[in-house]
Image (tube, rainbow over all chains, first blue to last red; front, side, top):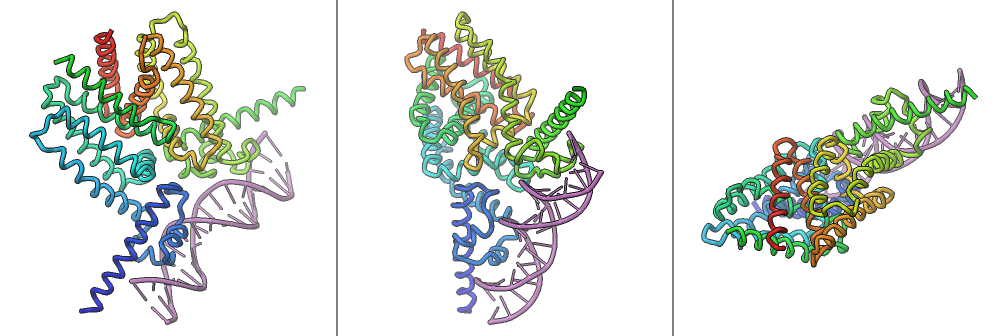
Length: 197
Length: 197
DNA sequence: GTCTATATCGCGATAGAC
DNA sequence: GTCTATCGCGATATAGAC
């Protein structure tokens, strides 16, 4: 029985190393410009070994994205508490998103660039779509609780604005004052909502 | 002299066919997933001929993007008239952008996806950057004329929101009610600006 | 479970005939 | 100006020894 757990450990170690190396490289060099050789070198394993754990390069990518999404889920969970003031939750959602993107910029660049290549990667399309739908649903319910007459439109616009800000940030890097712009957005947002009520 | 113009015509015909085929394919399949063979087949020419007119696949891409940008410039020119009401110009800018994107969705998908791969394409980076800077400059001057105390922030936020809306549209396709959301944005925008003054 | 060696393929790009 | 034929490379993926 000993040998069984040892195998499992080795297995775990290799898989983790491969995923970590691949995420690092995909994020920095892009998916297409990263070869299996690159990944193997970075992970300290042989090229062939990767295919013991993943059937293809694309499957590896999907697995990585899946992991990252699951790990990000906890943050959202907290904000779903129905007792919190919805407009504060939206502001918090915006700020937390900035923190997430800033602390993992390369990963989010990867995700965003992949969103435009889903025709060539059907497996990812599902993952990304589910993620987006969850976010929109959360925003819709928040706007509903704020008494909005157009919760869907409000939610889409909110989401689009946040995504747009991130796109600018990802493309312009530190030239772009993310924090200022997000604060500006939140302020304007609150102002207009308060004036309306 | 006759033969000279005939050559020029043939030349023109081939170049046009290549560019048209490449744009179509790049936009649908993505730049990396489109091979020279694909382009040649679609354009009805041989693989070799492409290299008579373009030194590389990347040069072909750059040429296409350059063309499209020049053709879109006229629309912006009209809006730079300093006599127009700046807030109306912004609304018009938003609406015209929607029309542009909708009428050439695949091209804009291509452009947007390329924005995240500029590390591998330095030549394009310059083109895209110039384009963005022009747009921001125009928006900044409009907000200044509106008496904004924070024209740069306003311009960035405006641009980011529009881009974000387009990103959603490009990813979600017709599931996403672009027109509704843009109108919603313009309405909110006008409301808050009017209330403030 | 891991490695090395290799098969196989398709790509971007070139050479040279017509 | 256009074509066919081909090079050379690097990629993904597999086979089989240890």
